[in-house]
Image (cartoon, rainbow, N blue to C red):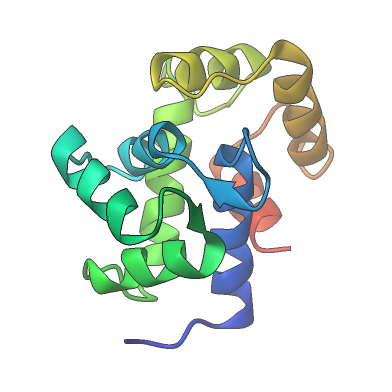
Length: 144
């Protein structure tokens, strides 16, 4: 298995923490399914159920990294996955993520963020960009 750089590990932690809504230290099946969908890697319910049986019903960050890297998601794929997450969040394709985009997409994926959490996430990322969260600002924020 490949080693992650500090920046890549931080990127994965950021994505993990965005989706770990019910328990900040673990993903449940719904959250993992939503995260996988955002990363462009949809899994069947049976695959997810089997995976979660093997990890004892909850997935911590180390198990998440292992799953991502063992599925052929090496370190070179981290940026591509973040780009896919951005494109999924940018529902209208205007190149900017809005709080409404984030709320709508997470709801559709079955791991809804309440509007306040969505706004806080947007404000945190938006403070590093101008005119909304654009891809370059999103990638920069995920790496810092």
